[in-house]
Each structure stands twice: as structure tokens, then as C-alpha cells.
Amino acid sequence: MSMQHRSDFQFRRHRWIGKVARDSELPGSAYRVAILIWDYSNMNYGYAWPSHSAIADNLGMHRSTVIRSINRLAERGWLSIEQRTGQGSTNRYHLAFGEMKLRLEKDGLKKIGCDPATK
Image (cartoon, rainbow, N blue to C red; front, top):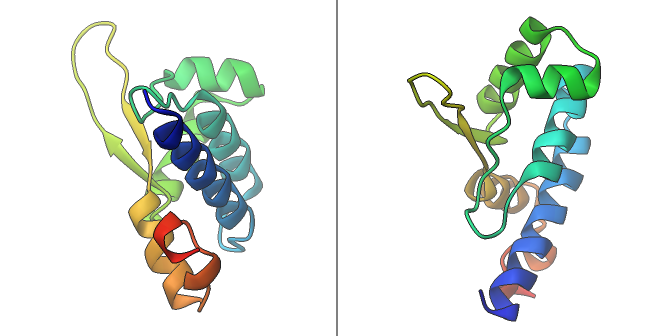
């Protein structure tokens, strides 16, 4: 993986968590889940894949609260979920950088947004 790719990923990842933190429509549990998924995001693959139970255990939450929080993050456009089935399979969670870019442009923040070409 190139240093430029790594740098771009980290830049976008940090912009993403900042924008999520400012979303007043999210409940507190969704923020905590977002931060954990953000922390688990793997730059080599571009997604995180913790199980609902692993998230619940790490955060001291009930599994149903984790599922509601993930669904709320997806509804608000912060995550895209790649649902996988089968024994031992976990969903893949992609930080929705594309949605973030649209939100940044809508908020008039394109010049300082997540696209390095607009710096």
C-alpha cells in the first residue's frame, strides 16, 4: 500500500468521524458504535468487520442496541453495510466517504472537505 493511499485513507477517516460527531440526529449509542467501527476500519481492506456481539462486549451495550445503532448510522448515510450470511460470517461496515463528501458539499465545506483534490 502506498504512503499516499494510507495518507488519503487516514485523512478521510478522520474527517468522517468529525462529521458523524456533529450529527445531532444520532443517539449517543450510535456515536459510540461509530467510534468503535471507525477504530476497527482496516485501511488495507477499506472496511471493518466486527460482530454485533464483539461491539456489544467492547462497549458494554446490549446486542439489540448495537444493531439499532448500526441501522441508524446506515439510515443517516454514515455507513454502508455489506450483509454476509453463513456460520461465522460478520457484516462488513464501510465508512460512507461518498455520503460524507455530499454532506460536506451541502454544508458548503467542499474547500476543506474530504477530497484531497479540493485542498
